[in-house]
Image (cartoon, rainbow, N blue to C red):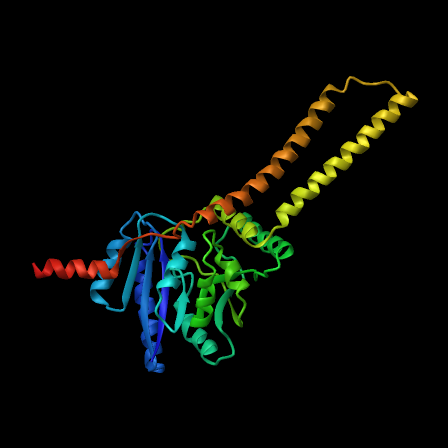
Length: 326
């Protein structure tokens, strides 16, 4: 028998969770009929939701023994949710997918066929369009992938999703990268292995709203750049060199001008102010870049846990059994 663990990070997904459960069980039940060697577990991660997500987990765990969950003590972010799911998944194969049905469960049978063949270690989806997104958001997303692939040695395929069907070997390799500042898209690519990309058109959420704001995605993109590229440090050094060269040229020009007495010497007050602000800005920019990398290093050296579990399906079932015994 082969166990497939379906890891589902959730944050305020009460509106869509019942629909997701109905869809995922329908697909997996069909897979077990076609492939009797397969069994499934559903591992939900509650990332500090403020709605009734945890209550829905309780209901699902009561009616389906395959349902497991981990509820964080607070919101730690999706990256922590993915890591917690991979770390606690028991399966020979592990699936990572969102609960919003933008990762269609209907792809799972084909994903399994690709991985089962032995030709691939991972099957994942790749969006061919960004239907439902604003043009500004889509433009910035495309630019991010271009910049990331230009400055990093780790290639990240444009449109590649976190929706993945992976072998245990690949999952173990990902878990070996236990860094605190995580960027899963980069980690999935960095570990290598043979990956099958399945194109599909973007699917909009059937219910609820996304928790990803434009600012959140922007900060997430910066995390990715700093996690898999040192190019910003090189840019800071380059700006410093350029600034020194420009300053040296201006000094030489000023000395020669004074010696040969070329033209009148203007007051130049505003020019000086502009130059001071320009170079002060460059210094602050470079210092800020260095500070960001230093901050990441500082957080890594603390060795804080990536997540803290406040409740699990095991503690919930044990407590319920104890109460029923009374």
